[in-house]
Length: 624
Image 1 (cartoon, helix red, strand yellow):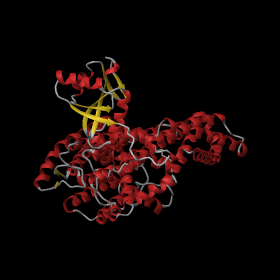
Image 2 (cartoon, one colour; image 1 turned 135 degrees about the vertical axis):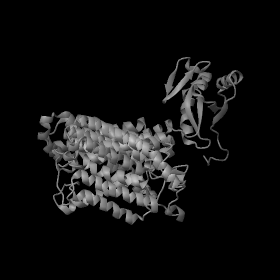
Image 3 (cartoon, helix red, strand yellow; image 1 turned 120 degrees about the vertical axis):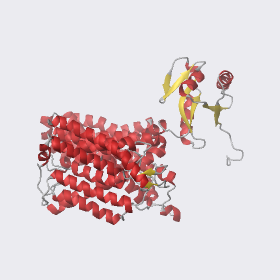
Image 4 (cartoon, one colour; image 1 turned 30 degrees about the horizontal axis):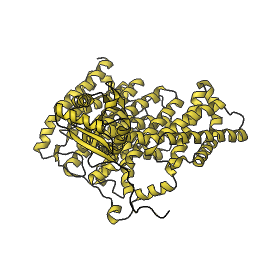
């Protein structure tokens, strides 16, 4: 049978078998009492069967057996790469390590192992991979490379285990990662590895049919540990043509598995700063924080799936694009993920919703998080560090844009020698002009203009410094391009918090849906105030402006209905029967008349008034 047909049949078999086996496993789990109860530190709201990893493992394994029977040469295609001391081929090592992790997870699902015992089992599975030759071989020092490899395997295994915190998240993210790896292996001509990756992706898709929110079954540790170790090993499986550089070896696996890494980093850092145990459960994962911000469970999962797919696509581009361009693409994506993680870390809504108090809060003392935040307000060291990376990335991108690939190599010596001068001059200029005092959540036009002034001053300072120190090799074109790129990166990083806050609020599912009544000034005020108020929690879905005319429009992303029948049209199309208006003294007569007309002709409405007034307090002023 042709390799192409095998690559189609194997994932199809995996999808079908897993989809059919999962209800059987679910029934057996319920009969055996293997059901996850509702807990305050867990997300699910109803008892749910576990042991879904059994269906994933069986569906994957049977699909691989079918693939080996249809194309006996598939296993032979997995033999290339670095040999190891363990007499196992790479495909045998992947299957063996995955099987060990599955058994470890199965035991934990049944009798709940201690964390130390789970770690020992994970190390055993990781050792199978390392001793078969699958690993991070960077330094040439075997002991060091083994340590790095074990850290990667155990880290990713636990990352997938932690990611299994919301319905469909781990299975969907794992399917995306496996699919991206399959595409990567096909680009490298490695049909054997692609077959394994597609079998795993197919099994996860089949399971996702039962695990999609609201889930009817969880994969449990048997599924998440198997998925984690197998993806970690698959991502480092030998790929001919890769160099031994750190970037070339690790960039693609890190980007493909960026969401599990982001979630683990966020949880670990957040719990450390809050003084909580890292191994305890909690509703402080990236998915929980997104849901707590109002996105809801399904949208939170889809958001992380899209980010995972984006990371995977950029990982594929790293294998096809020139290395210099690939570095910029990878840097930009990691920057975006870092900003998303920072925003979610600052927005500690997930912990608050779960009612998880920290040890520091219970004792009345400030947590490490609060102390770090207070210190950062005095000395913005995190913003300094971010800007150092952004300035360096912008300067590098300017070289890529200014010089052709054939000229770029000859310019790298000047780039490397001038980079410290550029970074130092820009940071000094930023601090001098005062861009570090702005609150990122309120970043607007005035703050953006300040960034432009600071960057212009920094560019002039860079030019003057380089003319004095390293005149030969200085390119005016590079400095001009650098100004525009660095301005976009610096301003964009500041605007990111406001953008993320606006997006999460715009697509929020929390609160009662309302229609905002009034002209643009009133609508602007209402949108701003409703975002800040929790009681009552009102969620705008449309705006009605009687003075807008019969035409439709949009304001701040919301549809605008105008004309005499604007309110009736908005109610009919949105299905919302609640309105909010800004109650200004001496204003709002036309709006109230419109509401009365609607009540007389169409029926009842819930009306909320946002009261706005400014009054002088008697006795509040001191002596003049």
